[in-house]
Length: 377
Ligand SMILES: Nc1ncnc2c1ncn2[C@@H]1O[C@H](COP(=O)(O)OP(=O)(O)OP(=O)(O)O)[C@@H](O)[C@H]1O
Ligand SMILES: [Mg+2]
Image (cartoon, rainbow, N blue to C red):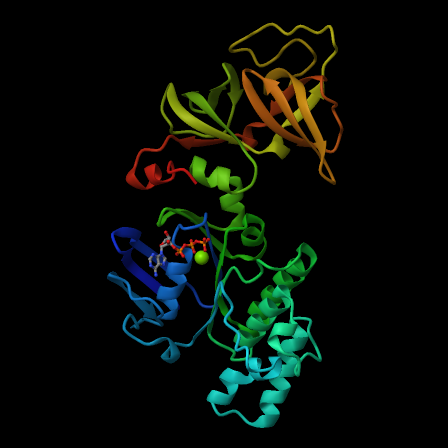
């Protein structure tokens, strides 16, 4: 199927600084795609190019297969909610939302109904007559979303539209946006630097850094199988450890052999390993238990027949963050971040295990794109 939107080899510089370099992306109809990345990586610039507010230096933009690179914004079937939501201060809220519909010559009754519907959608029913400056930041943000939605665009570009909302409201709005996508069939290109937001709503997440795509995939792929250390680090808390791939399905972490499921990295190659804090299995060990420092043996004679790699250490930090405890564990010369619903107080001697499926092996950076991730963020 032909993509609804296609960005082809887009490059863009401001003054002497290159913001996008040979950037390509395809968005399917009714897809919810999120651009995720640190501040300044070029997310807004991409949205502005899709919306027609910025011209690429090189490359082309296609909509339904048609080259729209030179088409002005108002001719595109694309609506944008900008990072700085530009509401009209001299109009009341109803007039703000109705603006686009008035221009396209819709009837008064149609406009009234649509405005009412949009206000209900963003939880601000009855606000038609209120002045813009009488609203809080979060309320203004919701009006900006309502204003874009009433036009029923084919594509909605949203640039960090939930940034000013509190957690509860943000979650409600996330739910509403997904509903809109499903009910109205709108295609979303969404920009955020909030990984949770990206993972919750998207069909596809595009992780960017320094104008490059670091990884593109479903939320599950991005979270469970990060392709490099930048993605792993950016998406949630992670333990990222320098390790050696001894051979297929065997990796040496902190000088201890762990079975894993990855293959094809070669023998005795330096790799990066990602282990999520929630995947660290913690077991309390007796105070007087002294494990032998060992290199290659999986079983330690303590009844553990599960052939897992295992490290011994001590809990050095512990904080309750709701639902679970977040702990730091010094083991094998590395400070591990671990999560558990069981509380292991500071000073507890523990063994940590990781099942092979939860050890994610990544190549060390090599290509130009992968080097870009090493830029400080
Ligand atoms: N009109 C402009 N003139 C000069 N530089 C610009 C312009 N627009 C963007 N830039 C620069 O391009 C880079 C990318 O900006 P962009 O706004 O796309 O980042 P972003 O990923 O949206 O960041 P944030 O998360 O902070 O909104 C930044 O270094 C920014 O300073
Ligand atoms: Mg931005």
